[in-house]
Amino acid sequence: VFADADLDAAAKKASVMYDDSGQVCLAGTRLLVEASVRDEFLERFHRFSDAHVLGDSREPATTVSPMIHPEHVDRVAGFVERAREHGDTILRGGRRSELGGADGLWYEPTLIEPLNNDSEVVQHEIFGPVLTFQTFTDEADAIRLANSTAYGLSAIVYTGSQERAERMGRAIRAGTIWTNCFLVRDLTAPFGGCGISGIGREGGDYALDFYSDLKMFQVLDGTTN
Image (cartoon, rainbow, N blue to C red; front, side):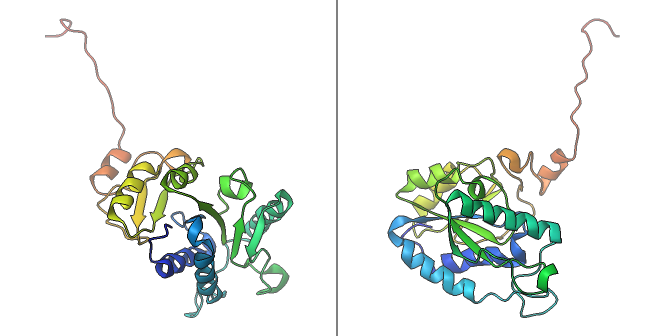
């Protein structure tokens, strides 16, 4: 998120990453925000996140649905506890929800500011309602942070500059990059990730290649009629 972006739109979209308790492959997990608008962004992000409703996914009012299994709740909680031990700062959440009692499948939407970029919550996929928050100083710093993990399925860039959007789109290592939007897909376009986020592409003609095996057949010249 750059300082020239629509901060309301960016913060609202960032809070949407808590939907489905973060159990969406394309959901963002790391928020990178230009340092000059850190506080402005966080104020907006907390406001939008406060409006979330944890509950049964069958209820219309629910915006944060339960996690898939009690063991997964334990896994997510473990990431957060280790982040505390590492010295990371919990900016919101950081605990199990009281919803559902001791066996509940909800974890409070959580935001963590890591002590450094080597933090486990930055470098590993949590797949829960946990986001990390880091600031950058310029485009080069943003690109460095964006490309600093082994993952690369998707990314979102918020900026008011077309030129910057194009520069960032070329520089970020990810299979899909949205600018000022999220989860807008043309099903004929290639879909897939970089790094350990995937190999190959699906979508349209690309799916034929993905699900095909290529075979090489050679014949020694002059040995057949």
